[in-house]
Length: 83
Image: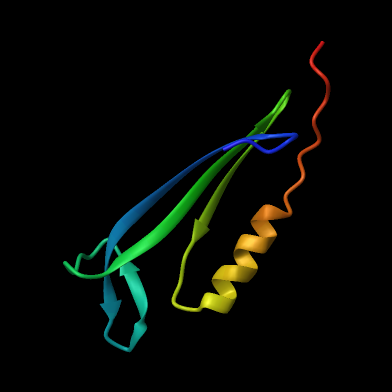
C-alpha cells in the first residue's frame, strides 16, 4: 500500500487469549482459549529519513476501533528530501 508521501506496509496477527473470569469482555494474553484471539494490526510507515511502527489493538467496540483507526490515519511524519 502506498500513500502519496509515505510507504505503508501492513500486517494483522491474532494472539491467542482467554477471557477474564471477572469480565468476559476483557481478555488475558498468555493464557489460551481455542476460540478467543486479540487482533493486532501493525503498520510500518516510512518516508525518506523517518520511520514509525504502529500497533493497533482491536477491541469489541466498533466506535473505539474506528476512532483508533482515524488517529493512526492522521499520523504525519516529517519527511526530508533525500540528499
